[in-house]
Length: 228
Image: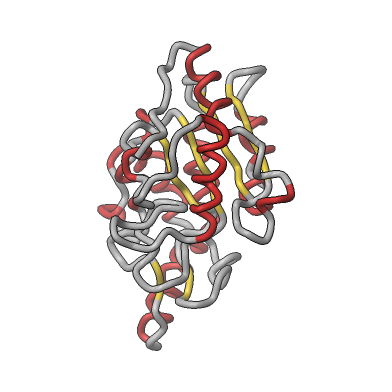
């Protein structure tokens, strides 16, 4: 990934890690996978879409997931989101169920979460690419250091921020957030992943949306309109 691919507001935070041998190795590996005919989601040009849509200085909430959807036409660079007209994946169905239970917002007909991103919700996965049909296939390939740097850049600011960590991979970043924040400077909400395999183990009933808005309002940061 060349520096020109990094959204301007994130460059100072990410360029140092992207210049490391590990990051260059990741870039080379991704190119080799594509040259070998393997399909990678999301496609080139969309892998940093979360950072492009939500500039660093506008982040109020971070929703952190595991890795992108691995089905054709699903992933477009925002965690848990799909474009208009794409069937809503099971994890997002469960997110909308919790949203309805938590805030009384009817389940949307679209799975496009861009309106959240435009309000300062950084929709970031721990790993930013995946091989078609093979969930978790790009874990451990070097994305962690890059997404760690993005999370650290948010946590180090002076602005109170909510970190919503869904799933075991995302929850590993909780300690990093708490170490960089102080006292009640940030709110960390960690729960199981909303996938059908784990949603009933503590995701349902976790009330992340109302807790987020209560925290933001208490700190004078406005609230998120979670409707779509």
